[in-house]
Length: 30
Image (cartoon, rainbow, N blue to C red; front, side, top):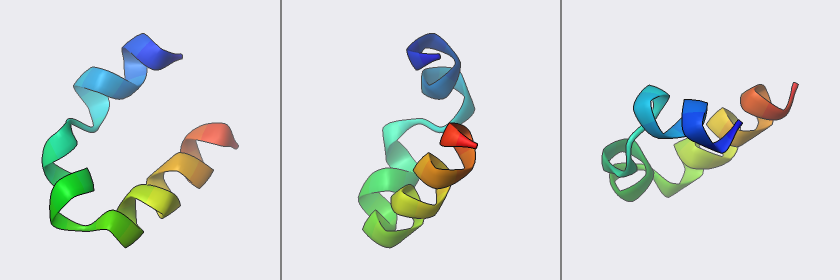
C-alpha cells in the first residue's frame, strides 16, 4: 500500500493542501 501511495500522490499536494491530504488518506483507506 505504501508503495502505491508514493507514485499516486507525491508530497507536493500534501504540502500545498494539508487538508486535502486528509481526504486522500480517507479515500485510500476505503
